[in-house]
Image (cartoon, rainbow over all chains, first blue to last red; front, side, top):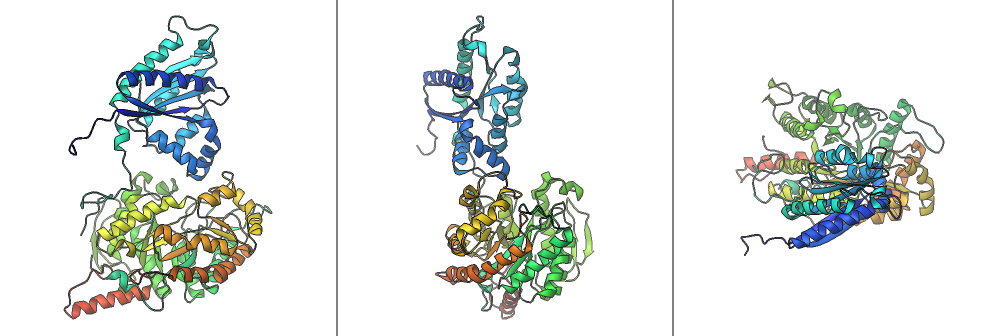
Length: 216
Length: 391
């Protein structure tokens, strides 16, 4: 029993939503992506815990962290929840051809190594379908830089996708479901939350310490 | 044991003092910016005041970019040495990455002689990106530079003739760093870091001190570093974890009446480098060791530090940044020296176990070396005394 690690049957999915208005279509898209992911993970036999972060609610703490270099206690909790999750769903509004400044600010305060191997599902919203490449020109390179594993399918929702003039060949619900199914397969393989390393952990062996020092 | 040997009767158990970054900052209350000369003279006056009010240590930063003036710490510390009698002169920090370790060995051994041994140093990497290339180095090699440069510095201060080659500096053949350290005992070395376990490991490996600046960030961050250093100090056989040599920074602004302190300091806080224009003074004082209030509030906050970090050897305060005028800083030092430190000395002495070493002094290090040599001459088993060991 002690020799083998039991299969983890639970997955924690962090959701970062950078919408500014309330209610927000960015949050709406995030919620739909969560539902699809959760449904497919449950089908695969996983228990799912969702942690949702509305960046608007911590915007001031994010700015303070940029200025001081350390997070407030509540922001620190949020960062631990996001970086310690098994998977991340990240959704931003499109502002001036890119992710929002608040979204980028949040990414900027994370340790650059803290999302390594993190499965990420990217989503974005915008006023016009002509901005849909924001996913592949802005969001995907950002997470690739951080060595996260970005799911091939991201979802972009323009205002019209929510009603009046939807894409009837590939409607939004279909795209969301495809993204959720693909992402669930990613998340199933992710065990990163079970093997996070504490840089201040005392070395287990009596061998060399960090920096290559050898006991005399 | 080395740690016990640091206890001598005359030296204070915990050394109290101040450390300065040496920033030239506009006073936000009147728009006045001191000249470099004014600021340099102010720092020299502040150091002398530190001794006058009964503090034990003055530590000076080293920077190579405006708005900071102290690019040449031993020049300023040499002047202070001549003007003081008891004050230990230290640094916060000496850049082990971009300085040549040969020049550090020479400068600080020289300062030791000038100051009759009242010298130690805190080594740091420096976090200003362009300083590395300005001095021909690469910030991405910060940790390897700190490790290799200190390995050389450690030898230069202990071996009369050094043959050496490494990755970052031109080799040495038959080199003798002059002058040799006073009484053959190198200045005590603290390693300062704000985030790197590698530097805590380095301090532990050599049995040197570790200094956490303990300002601007929550103390919990520094507690992890100190905890790590203490464990590794024991691992490398220099004593028990609670005997590791720990120094902490701190930051305070005081007035007799707590409300007056807040009112006076707020414009400086709001416009300060590092944290200005961000969190409120109330948030920042709650989240970091900055304490703004009455002397009693500072006493209460800092008397509690030993519970978070264990009994330690040195407590330095940042008192003179953010454009505070010299007159105000000198008044702050009066309060610190007359009302805060005497009480903290008593508080820190309460229940301090006898096996906890005192803050390191040259006299104690010489005594430790002599004791180790006597023991050896007497044919006794050689005890662990890294200070006296040939590397």
